[in-house]
Image (cartoon, rainbow, N blue to C red; front, top):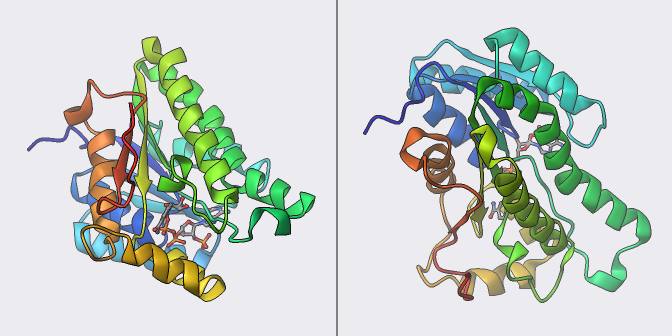
Length: 257
Ligand SMILES: NC(=O)c1ccc[n+]([C@@H]2O[C@H](COP(=O)([O-])OP(=O)(O)OC[C@H]3O[C@@H](n4cnc5c(N)ncnc54)[C@H](OP(=O)(O)O)[C@@H]3O)[C@@H](O)[C@H]2O)c1
């Protein structure tokens, strides 16, 4: 199936491992130019080498940036345009959650949670969107998380942030549909990455409970999320905007309308 990604410029924030690394490899295999963003230069170097080797595509670069820092979003976008001339696809994928129960969260921790993923995705989108609008179109994919619809019983800062991002995804898609920029979300849940094993360390009971609740009976693989990111970025999803696709082995129990 032709995805129409050849020669497209992809800015992939949170790309040195896990879901982002798999998505980078898929985009590069499809012939896109891919800019990988993360905080660790060493991890990014290794990731770029792996993506180039697996895809055979040389147009894969990295830029070190931390989306918690206010000015980094503009630098990330500028670096991508400087390298590939423009941005056609933005994937916001760099997130982390705090596992504390609500009343154990301090004001500083709430502020940290909101600044990390919620404002990180919003600021990067605001920096990249004018370029995509000028191009007459593009695709933004926000990798959010199932807790935006169904909070865990043992923590909720992740759900508060993810619910905000689902709202931001829908409202941006609607407000700017005429620009040709489509905006969608992917909701991973229980995907076997470093992030999930970190969670296991801080909240072993919650971790075991949530795995037992997955109807497909196993953890998801990063490539199973990446393929949906690539689909939502491609011409194959040209009539889809403002939606969120759960990739969770059936773990989300609610029906969404
Ligand atoms: N895995 C799951 O089950 C699951 C469930 C729900 C939601 N999600 C969401 O899915 C996305 C991907 O998750 P994942 O499991 O693949 O995560 P992961 O394995 O921890 O990878 C996260 C990637 O983002 C980068 N990153 C983290 N913080 C960053 C920052 N402040 N600035 C720039 N880059 C940063 C990391 O590199 P550095 O550390 O070097 O910066 C890494 O490349 C995240 O938004 C996560 O919240 C995942």
